[in-house]
Image 1 (spheres, rainbow over the protein chains, first blue to last red):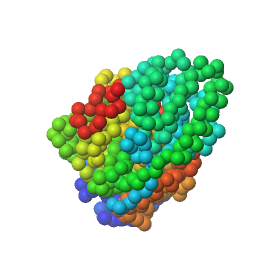
Image 2 (image 1 turned 90 degrees about the vertical axis):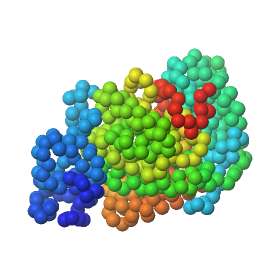
Image 3 (image 1 turned 180 degrees about the vertical axis):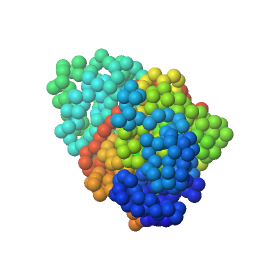
Image 4 (image 1 turned 180 degrees about the horizontal axis):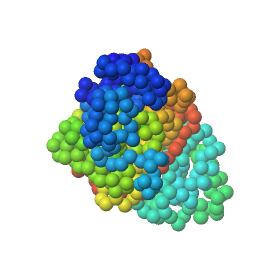
Length: 102
Length: 404
């Protein structure tokens, strides 16, 4: 795997890579033969797509589904709550608490 | 490790403890302040406060209070009652006495108010502390230990470093004949099939699977899962992703049984503690914070708690030492005084999962032998106990001794 020090793929069936350290915006990533510039700062443990992912596709980490993509996601793009949702229960954050009326 | 032995405290009910605490237990919130004032003048590692805040009866709270007041790490108990609450203080005192521990009850309304209750309580605790100095010591080994695990303040590193390392420790403990308990069935949503495959019997497999289904239903009714905003700030997204990390604490051993809060395992092995109430959701969020889960792990007899954290939890407990295993190397460096083990070394590549697991085991034995953990040194003793209701577990390996 490229950038092996900056990212880790936990299972070969995964479509996400995890940052093994905090990375600054502008860092050049080499993924699947492509050079991609990191758009935003990426925290330790955060995920980026290791391939292009279609809306509705499962996000696979460590070989299991952690939810579904809510939009098309390009290779190298951050995967977080703006483009991924649970298949079981909604995720509560301070930003979306009004939405859930809590 | 197989041959590790240390000196514990021998209780006349046959159990063995790794601490020798005097508990001050309030039986309603109205007696909380008096209890805190009683305990405050003593060293906070020798005298600890627990209690139940509710004024109205609850079988679950009775059972948990009974188990905590007769926990192997507890040597003596002072009950503090206002006087008009529903808690059966006579029944609890009787049960503590039957376990061979010394017990006394201060009733604030009978003794004449706050000041007199505090004076009476402090003088009793003073006597209990000096009596406990002569508690019989006894050899303990891994086979005598019950170890609980919990994760709190999780982030995306928890599931990569600290949780798998604790999973490795759990496999080792089970192989050595210890008893290991994992919990938070709401954090196993998505893993019900994996859990069921690890059950020792088909009946248990069905029970485990049902119990995760119940949790999913309960949390859906509450409107959200066991997921805090800090989890998302730390790189986690969905309940499934959090579950993935949390589940890895349980290791790979076969599961021997399902416990409800207050069930003490009769045999060694690996157990799942079901923390989500049975019946229709009616008591609010199943576990309002990490300490609510720690209370229930202790009520199942856990001598020691392995607590993994990524964001950086600082909490402790009044009865069972809490060891902090920090998953995130950046958090570890920011909050080192609160941490016992730096599992972030797995992420930086400085150590393997096996090496960190070995370090946890060594420190766990030291803790059992009396060395204070980071949270003990800092005086942490958070405690929460809430209203809940449970049906007995079906698969029997757990004892029913908490059911009076």
